[in-house]
Length: 177
Image (cartoon, rainbow, N blue to C red):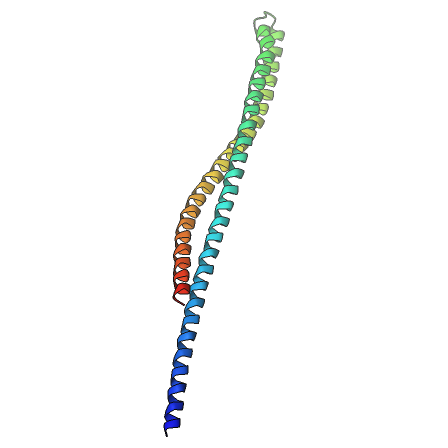
C-alpha cells in the first residue's frame, strides 16, 4: 500500500513537471514564432519601400525625359513658325503686284504654304500631346511611389515596434527558464 501510494505520488509529480515543461516549450515556440512573423513583416515592408523607390525613380526618369523632349519640340515649333514666316514673306510681296495673274498665283502659293504649315503644326501638336501625357504619367508614377513609400515606412515603423516587443518577450521568457 505504501509502495503504491509512493508510486502514484511519483507519477503525479513527474506528470506535473512534464506538463509544465511542455507548456513552457509551447510558450517559447509561440514567442519564437511571433519574432519570426514580426521579422517577416519588417522584411515585407522593406520590399515595399524598395518597390516604392523604384516607382519614384522611374517616374522621375520618365518626366525628365519628357521634359527634355518638350524642349526639343518647342525648338521645332519655332523652326516651323520661322519657316512659315520665311515662305510667306515673298508671297506677300507678290500680293502688292499690279499684275492680276501674279496676285492670283500668290493666293494659290499662299494656300499651299498655309496647308503645309497646318499639316506640320498638326504633326507637332500630336507629338506635343503625347509628350505632355508622358510627362504627366511620369509625375503621377512618382507621386504614387511617394505615397506608397510613406505608407510602407509607417508600416515598417509599426512592425519594428512589434519585432522589438516580441524579441523582448522572448528574452524575458528565456531568462525565466
